[in-house]
Length: 184
Image 1 (cartoon, one colour):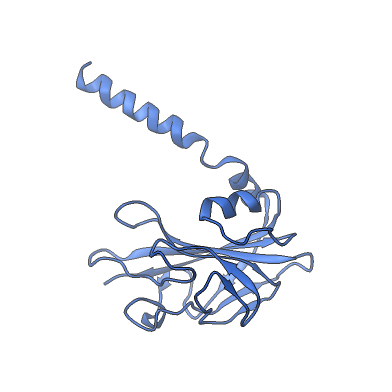
Image 2 (tube, rainbow, N blue to C red):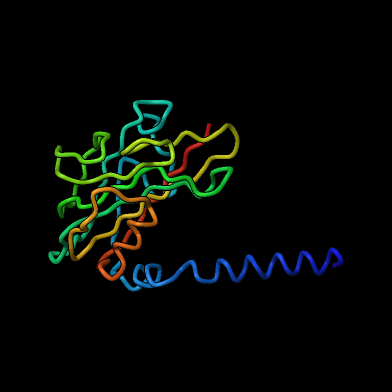
């Protein structure tokens, strides 16, 4: 097999492998009503150091604009697609009661009871809860705070990001995201 054939074959394999990644959950997000998500930083602006590993490493406050009265729960996934070895998951939290204001400093732990009852999955730092931006020196990274408003609460006590996405399938009624930037 010559080099051109090999590269073409690898490209086709990658194309086929990723062609199904949007899948049903991705389609549902695209069909969900779009909402605005706000914080102490604006979309595509720098995340204050307080919310990173260089500061207090606490979750930032989030505000959900025009939350549906049909909302039964909220889930948040925060990840960094610019990480050196693929997307790095910083936070997975679900079954947040419907609220337009999520305060800063959500405590670590698999199951939390304050400021509301919710469950958190293990992030890629190996902890249950929020792990702030902590990129290697170089180009700043983008951090996506993805907010899913659901028409149900999820029957999950522990989940990976993939399991959470699967469980949300068919229940996403609103979706919004806030992108923060942080570099060192």
